[in-house]
Amino acid sequence: MSKQSINILIFLVSILILVGIANIYFLLQKDRHIMTPADKTETENYEDYNAGEIEEDKDTTLESLQEKPETGQTSQQDKPSSANQPEADAKKEGDSRETEKAASSPARQKEIDIEYWLERSIPLTFESRTETSEDIRKQYEHIVRELEQVRTHLKNGDHSQAMALLRPMMWDRSNIYREDAEWYYILALISAGNKNTAIEQLNRLLRDNIHLYYFLGRELHEELVPIRDLIQRQVRSRGDRPADGF
Image 1 (cartoon, one colour):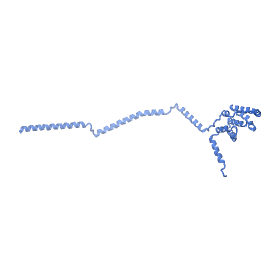
Image 2 (spheres, helix red, strand yellow):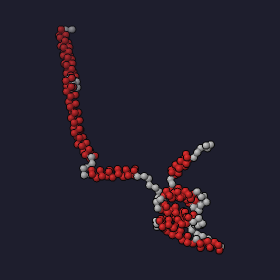
Image 3 (cartoon, one colour):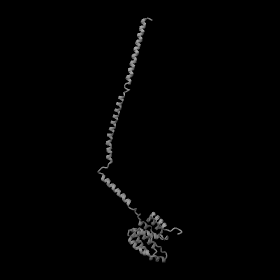
Image 4 (cartoon, one colour):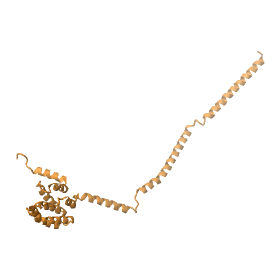
């Protein structure tokens, strides 16, 4: 190989080396240009973090400022207006008085419908089939008329007139309408509001289980005397009764 060929070969190799170095240089510059925006320094990252916190604080402050008027408006709506306050207080006071009145007042006794019991009473009739029975009917004809007047007085609420007619009938032991008079006398006592005496008379009537108004009297007794009182009386009577063997 001649010297000139060697020099040309060296020259070409040098050119190749230079081209290779240049390519490496440009590749390094290109990689550095791509990585630099992504990889930040610690100072830049700290500044970005502080900026994010400041933005969050601003958003929180704005939200709190927006919520405060709504909260104030709600509280104002919940409070009763000063114009309606006296009316609301008066209503509360009235309700409290009604509650106290209902709690303090005793239970009212059940009202007895006198007219209802008059309609259920046994009809005042007398069958006269013989001459003797006809004489008896005429003998007590005025008693029947007076008992009809008693019924009318009780329907009209005039219990005093009814009692005045009934007392002589009740004392007459031979009066065949005496049991009717006892029944109407009890109704007259109830009409007068004297229920305690009416219960005493009714208890006396119920001692006779063949009384004309025995079964009707038992129904009236249930209306006058509550079941609770009956139980208490039975317990009290058993307590007063001496035990067997003494």
